[in-house]
Image (cartoon, rainbow, N blue to C red; front, side, top):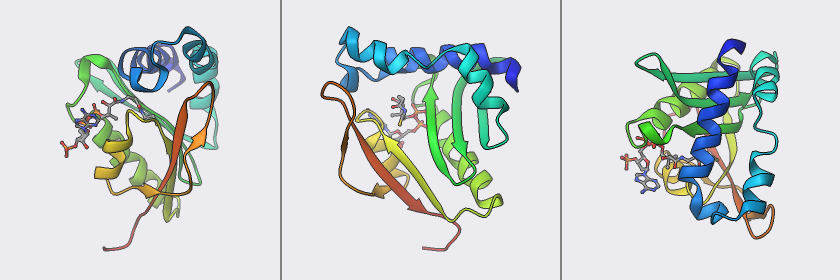
Length: 152
Ligand SMILES: CC(C)(COP(=O)(O)OP(=O)(O)OC[C@H]1O[C@@H](n2cnc3c(N)ncnc32)[C@H](O)[C@@H]1OP(=O)(O)O)[C@@H](O)C(=O)NCCC(=O)NCCS
């Protein structure tokens, strides 16, 4: 819901700042670049778009996770609140996004992982899908993919 935009944006910004230090190394320039488009107004647009699936996880009435995917199964954002780390939030989000992708006829999920989340995606069955891509000032993202909807 677009009314979740501000709270979801806060969660994503905190997640980047507090959990992704392995990627941004507390470098103010990298943080500014990473956070630049993470505004409540953009979240409202992304959530409202018919081309996206946006999901939140709530705990005790508070948003603690946010996931955004397009209808081709490309995950753009998946972030957990630092207050709810390692409680199954990202696992639940990823599984729900995969279910939504399957329902839309998608058979391959794609994403670009941070260094921080690499281990998480590997253990969820995602495999490298190309070379790590240099993003900004020494930061890298890792293209990954996973076939869905087929038994292993
Ligand atoms: C790493 C991260 C994605 C895990 O999500 P979470 O909601 O905190 O954790 P969950 O309980 O859903 O998942 C647990 C899994 O995380 C992974 N994990 C556990 N400890 C970890 C650690 N220290 N570092 C990285 N991954 C770890 C494991 O795969 C674990 O699964 P297992 O218990 O079956 O081994 C999350 O904590 C994080 O740092 N997010 C930062 C935002 C980010 O980088 N998002 C991705 C952008 S592409």
